[in-house]
Image (cartoon, rainbow, N blue to C red; front, side):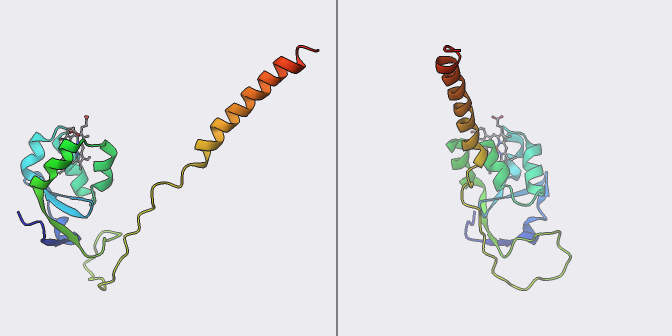
Length: 138
Ligand code: HEM
């Protein structure tokens, strides 16, 4: 296992089959071929994630346990090198431009997440106020 080896996206994308399956997770490259059959989530999801290019989101979406995370070292073969292609490669070699991987930090917390409970609270308060002070005196 050589975890310092660097692989280009184009090369990694050649390893998406059942007999040779690599995954990109958090900028690292994992050869999960031997793990396909043993993966508790099934081999299809791994093959799918491999074919999709970057498996980071799918891996995180599942909410893998720390056991799963610690298992990953076993399959680590290196890191990803170079810019992430936005589209299917056309064969043109792109200028070696440094792409800043900017991930939107956390989430810009959904506005409705705050507004909705407040709205419900306001309606409840209005109902209580009406029933307690207005309706009784009517
Ligand atoms: C090297 C990479 C991976 C390793 C070592 C790994 C390992 C594991 C392990 C140990 C589990 C059992 C549950 C747990 O402990 O969290 C699991 C479940 C699962 N994994 Fe992965 N996994 C990897 C990548 C992925 C990827 C890329 C996907 C993406 C689709 C995926 C999808 C799932 C699903 C759907 C389950 C089943 C969850 C359930 O039914 O509870 N895994 N994986």
